[in-house]
Image (tube, rainbow, N blue to C red; front, side):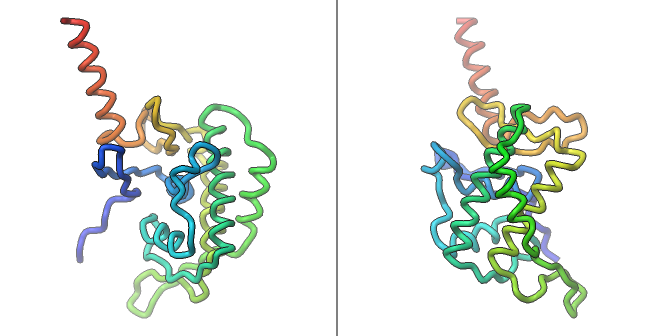
Length: 200
C-alpha cells in the first residue's frame, strides 16, 4: 500500500516555490481558494470544475464523485467569504457578524456527504454527492471547529504579508506560521539579515 500524502493543501508562493499548508481543518482549506474584499484577486472558484478540483486537493478521503452546478459554486464563494470573516474575527479575539453566522448555519442545515463502507471494506461516499452536500460537510466541520476544544486556537499567520488562517493543534499551542517552510523560513531569513546588518 502506497503511503498517504500528508494533510494539507499545496500552495504556490510568489517566488514560484511550492509548499504544503496544513490549516488543521477541512473548512479552513476552503479559505485557500480566495476570499472577500482584497482577497478576491486570488479567486479560484469560477466554475463547477474548480470546486470539484478543490475537493480533490482537500482532506476529504477518498475524493467524492461530485455533481456540482454553477449555483453551488456561487454558494461556495458565499460560504467561504463568510467563513473567512468568522475565523478572522475569531483569530483576532472578536465576535462574528450575525449575517456571516447565518450563512454558515444555513449551509450546515443541508444534508452532508454520507460516508459508507464499500464491498472491499474501504471507505467511500454514498451515492448522490452534490455541491450542497459538499458545502454542508464543510460548514459542519466549521461548526465543530468553532464550538470544539480547539475553537480558541484559530489563528492567523504571524507574517505581516500573509493572511492564512489555521487551527493550532500542536501540544504546546505555540504555532505562529502558516507553514515553517514558507513564512517561518522567511521570518528566519529576515531576522538573520537584520542581525547581520546591525552587526555591520
